[in-house]
Length: 351
Image (cartoon, rainbow, N blue to C red; front, side):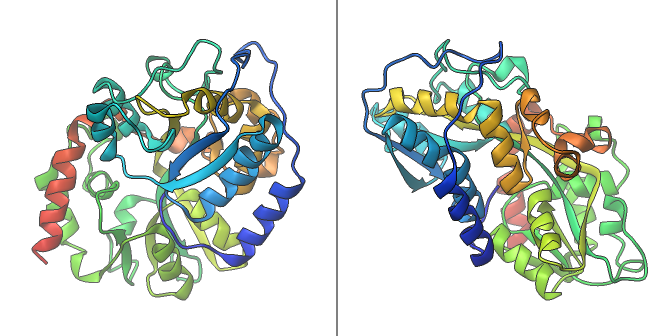
């Protein structure tokens, strides 16, 4: 995920790891040969900054640069530019960190380049999307809470129960699983979420609106939770785990957390497509996937990478909690996302 706030302690740790890491690649049968010659000397990766960018540099870009001599450059991601790139037949960057539903809709719109045959496919990506999606990670989006309360929340219904679980809630000011969480709290089953009943969702959200602090980045949400400004916050598992490791009295609710994956996707007309494809292949190797998981507590998209992680680390990852997850219907969300975003902005403006 998203957010631009950096945490100095984590940043120092990750950058130190980046300095000492050696490059490596997998040779399991699911791997591509990575044999295409790289002629570009630069690769531009568009992402959302913050601690995930630091970890991505440590686990992927720094060792890739050392092995292949390609200089990595970060840019700030703006998925809306993908259509402009396709129209002008000229892209500003070579890869973008895309959520799973955006990968689905942008690939269907012809805005992403297909991965060559020699690029490793991440085997935990659904088969229908592997032509465009690899090199990413997975996350569970649920809610973090303070453990010092008198009762322990266990479900989305608890998130919306201000009487039993008093205190402010934190939600993003952009559409990001608020409707889904409200519908689950209102009794809708996970498999019946899409297409989203937005009127029903906003009626449920109205019940807690006066007790919500809205955040514009996940870093800000972490601050709200860490400072005690809210008792619960809609967040990805990694963000809450970082606070736990810093000794704060918080925990994460895995029950019905929304399981999603990301991809390192290549725009059409990427200026350094050769280096981009090679980097996707490198990011998909089990050893590198495992290292990203260790640094972030986001899960690997390689089943071979899971075997390289100790049990304590695995328990902190979405991969170990799929039995209680609400897996996102990416095609359903992709079809709903524009309407969802517009309706949520209108709902915010009514307050």
